[in-house]
Amino acid sequence: MELEIRHLRAICAIGDAGSLSRAATQLGISQPSLTTLLQRVERMVGGKLFDRGRAGAVPTPLGTQMLQRARLLLVELEAFGATVPVGGPVRFGSVHMECVAVLFSRLERVLSDVTLYVDPSSTALALALGKGHLDAAVIAVDEEQDLGLPRGVAQRIVVPWVPVYIALPASHPLAALPEVELAALSGEAWVGPPGAEDGSLTALRAACRAEGFVPRIRFEVPSGAGRQLIAAGKAVQLVEPTSQGGPGVAVRPLAGAPMRMRLVFAWRRERLTWSQASRVYAEVLGAYADQAMASPAFRPWWEERGAALTSAR
Image 1 (spheres, rainbow, N blue to C red):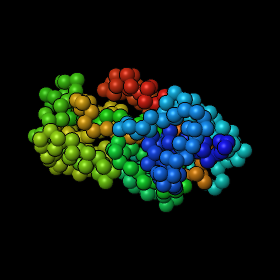
Image 2 (cartoon, rainbow, N blue to C red):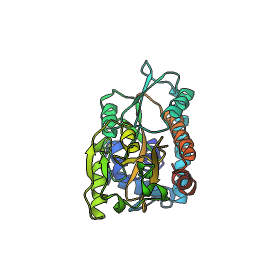
Image 3 (cartoon, rainbow, N blue to C red):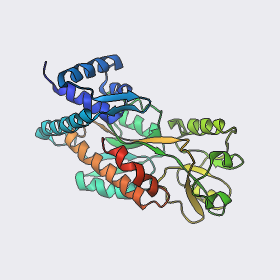
Image 4 (spheres, helix red, strand yellow):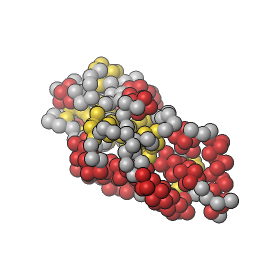
């Protein structure tokens, strides 16, 4: 038996998704079928390609080599038809992140015509991809949340996980600390997480419950509009870790990272070839890494873990 294109796509799907279940959903096959296929490939190459555990499917040294070669081969194969088959601009969606301006500038380097749509809800972005209203998107969800992307929508993990941070008034006593214990926020008024159906509200309630309290959510405001309430000393809010805060707003890590999110790049296969998607993916990762290094609160974490987390992507 020889390696086939479907084997290469399966290996890449597992490496990009970080788990067999998510990769199976992406490929439109059952998880047992994908497991069997992987086992056949591992027998052919003579070694284990992924270690499977609580962290998902992590490439072994052999798996990392296979992923690099498989991606190069797929890029070469798709380079024969490396044009967008449907006319019009590439409609690109993104969750609300500090790096969206940098991201758009980077996208213009690799896509001749692109429009950007920002939505705080990753569920809304995933639905728009599935219905063909978007061609590609950067999506952030709770680490345990399954995007449930339909067949025909591919994905690559940009960062397997990053911690969720807290924004609080700069005048708050906790703002003087390098990190904040979640339990210390038990008496605060909270701004509800944007895109609550993405799992962020459930994750917040579960993390607070583990600390012995129920978060008092007093405000539901559009993404970014909570800063005025925080600066006025009225509320605290979960934020993505690259957030810069603003006047009167301090951003701090939560001790022990009780909540974590996964950052994913997804695209419709008929709108972007693998070669184009790989170039866009590199720009997405570059934009996020640049913003991480520019964030005083997040830079130490990124310098310590960012390279290791993204090296096998």
